[in-house]
Each structure stands twice: as C-alpha cells, then as structure tokens.
Length: 343
Length: 278
Image 1 (spheres, rainbow over the protein chains, first blue to last red):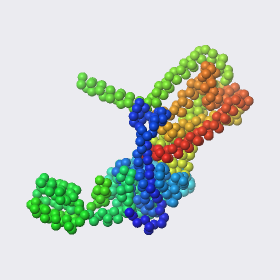
Image 2: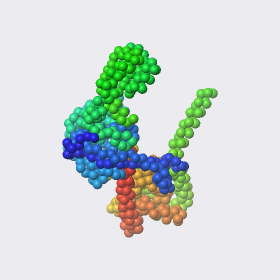
Image 3: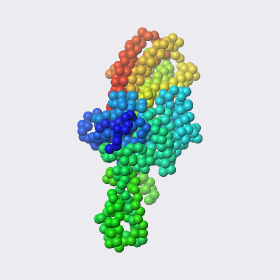
Image 4: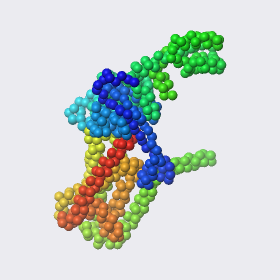
C-alpha cells in the first residue's frame, strides 16, 4: 500500500465505501415499463442488487492526481460520482476537504466538478463556446465582472480562442472536450473528476488533451484530480497514484513509481531467430517459460529474474537446435503488469 | 419481382421495429389510445352544445362564443405550459446531461426551476399577447370595460401557483416512479382532463352532473371561469369569491405537497444514483 503519512491534508478520502444498485426487471407484460412495475409493487428482490463498489478506501492529497483504472463495469464512474457528491455511499464514508459528503452534501458538491468523456454534455449546440461559457458562468454564479475575465482566460488556456464564435455543433470532439474543461475552469473547483477524457478521440487529439491535462491541471498542482481511464499509458503519464478496480473491488492502490518498482523487476525477453519456429519448439518453450507472445520467428517471455532465466534459456535453445539472431531484454510496461493483475 | 419482394420485406422490418418501439412503454401506449378517445368525446360535447343551448349558457360568461374561446385559449396556453414546465425541464436537462452540472452549481436544481419558469413564460406571454391582439384588437371581440386588473392578477397568480405546484408533483414522478420516458401519469391526467372538463372550449356547466363535480375539483376550471367572468363580464371580488377561496386553498395544499414530493424524489435519486443518466 502507498505511504500515506507524508501528507496531512487529504482532499478526497474514501473509507470502506460500498455502493449497490438495483437491477431492473426485464420480465412480464410490462417489461421495461418501470412505472407499472412499481405500481404493481412487485418485490424488488426479484430484480436483485448489483454491487458497484465494495470496501473501497483511498486518500488523495492536495494537488495530487489519482488514476482510476479498470475494465468496463469495474465501478470507475460510480467512484467519481461519489467523489462529486452526485451519489451517496450505502456504507462507509466519503470525505471531500474533510467534510462527510452525506452530512454536508451541499458544501461538498460545491468543491468538485465532473468532466465526462461524452461529446454531448450539456452544451447548447446552436450557441458559440463563448455564449455557452457565459451561460455556465451565470449558473455557477461567477460575478459578472469576473466572468468576462475568466471566460477570456479559459478560452486562451484551453485553446478555444480561434473558435470562440463558432457554433458548438461545428466543433470537433477534441474542441468539445476542451470546452468541457473550460466550463469546469469557470466553476473554480479544487477537485476535478475526469471520466475517460480521451475516449472517442483519435490518438493525436487524445495526446493533445493529455498534454492539456498535464500542463494546465496536473502540472500546476492547484487541483486535486481523479482521472478514470482504461488507458494505462495515460495514467502512467499523468498520475501520481494508481487505483485499480475490478468488479467494484480495489485490486491495487499504490503510487505509479511503487507499482513499477515492486512489479517492475520483471523483464520481458524477446528472442528472434533466423528460422521459423516449429510447433514442437513452441510447446517446449511454453512448458519451461512464461511466454506472452509468439510470432513466426520470435517469442516473448516475461520473467521475474532475467539473470537466472537467460542461461537456462540458452541451454534449452541449444538443445532444441535453435540459434537466436537477437535477444532483447526490456522492462515491461505498466499495462502488462496491470493486465496480469486483472487476469 | 425479386426487388419488389425485397422492398416488401424491408418495409415489414421497418413496421415491426416501429411497433416494438411504440409498444415498449405499454402504459404510455394505452394512455395515448385513451387520449384519442377523450379528444373525440370533447369535440362531440362541443358540437352538441354549439348546435343546441350554446347561446343560453354562454351568457354566464359574457356576450358571445368568440370572446369565450379567445380568453379560454390565452389562459389555457399559460395553464398548459405551467403544468408541463417542471417535468419537461427536468427531462430535457436530464437527457442532455445538463442536470449533472446543474446539481454541482451553487443553486443546484433551483437554477433549473428559475430558468424553466422564465423561459416558458417568456414564450407563452408573447403567444398570449398575439392572440389578445388578434382577437380583441383586430377582430374587435368585446371585453368588459369594468374588468378589475388587480383582481385579474390575483386570480391569475393563484391559478398559476396551484398549477405550478401540480407541475412539481408531476416532475417528482420522474424519479419516484421512474417515469423518464413515455408519458408521465400526473401530467397526462391533467392535460387530458383540462380541455374535456375545465371549460377550455365550452362551459363546464353543460357537462352531466357527475362530471361537473370532477371538473370543479380542478384549479383550471376555477381559474378559467373566474378569469372569463372578470375579463368578459367585469365581475367583482365577491362574485367570484368561492373560486378565489378554492384556488387559495388548493395552492397552499399543492405547494406543500409539491415541495415535499420533489424533495423526496431528489433524495431518492441521489441515493439510488439516478441523477446523472450516464
């Protein structure tokens, strides 16, 4: 587990948080028609419960960035909603800036902002980014004089100055995501919950958004960030700590550096041959080593101890009559480590 | 021939798919059918009345049917917008994901309510003004010179407050009954009963006695009747006292009920994670 004692001011804290949802019934004449389902008072137990989060605990310090990783349905979005007080826990506690979200919902709500990955998120498509920001500044009660100044800053910081007068309906997905962030910037919140901010974006635009998050949000350490993503590369690049969820449970919670140093002594060995590999070669290698990838003329092995593995490998190759043309030893990526954990 | 069969098959797939979607919300489907039936009955009653005792009963409300109808249409625009306003505001904000951000704003859901009311009445006022201009100024429909503007504002306000409270009850059903798509039952009931019973197109007095009893339970009936009497006949406070008292009492009860249910609905949504739809 991560060393927590070096920080005394935690902005977001989860203590044994559990959250369950009801599964909806899909049976009978009125299937899907929840109105009648409720009027007929069918037993809720029929539908059953889904455990979205189970005993989740973690702490995020001021200016830190926590990466939340997990497959679809792991509970990432639920966790973000809880941090923004859009949901309340069934048991356990969520604290934002030391305040319990259940007791001080109104106060904790005003400290966090959620940024979803969806392209369509509450913008008036017929208005320009500037007019949309003007509207949201009024909603977030930014004083009139300050609003104009802030909007100018937001348009500049998030690279929207050139499209400030263009209708939102004509903006690209990347620009919309920038506008999403600009809106949150106006609200002036300390906690930012980013829910898959680069989803649906092409790799170039995604990288652009990552850079923006890194430079504007993470870099200045003014904000506490919860970043949910399925992209391990993104989290490795942007986050200080990482929390891996699987089926609502915490599988791993540690600093990115710790994860890599604890599990990172593993090595990936790629052996390339001049000749194509036969079925018997692969079978023998698989029985002796942890093979992660096989090609026509190469194999990739993951090992905990490269120093011990290499002589053993040479010996076996000689016995099989295989002559390697190249041997490459590399550090496995965080992605490989986490995928192994989730399996 | 093969092309024709292909087209036929394609058309059948479209029809089947549409039918499945149409009947996915079966209550909504059944209520839609009932709506058509009530519409037919409403026009049947109107037709019978116009071809029979119309000229006699219209005297309760003024000189002629044209002015009766114009006042009815203007007021009905406000009433209809009022009982739909919160449910549709909540629904549109919910499905566009704006609700999530509004909830995180300092005013929260209150911001949505303020915006919905302002925008709705801005639109409806323009519409009502145009009907007024056309009906009373261009067509020269008579209205009473003795109409008391203060009394008019009082009755209008009481009617709107009571209907807005019903709208809050209707919006609560969005989360309480999870009526997020298809028809919302409270809104449906009110919008169905108003033209039929409340006297938009004909006076409620022509309805059979049992239906009249139901009609006078609706705040719309009292609102429409009183406003017509003020504008078209120049009636004073004491002549419409009964309706004013009913509207005041209804407003108090409905405001309390609306607030209570809406609070409960929000609490439930927050607990069950129903607030943001993504």
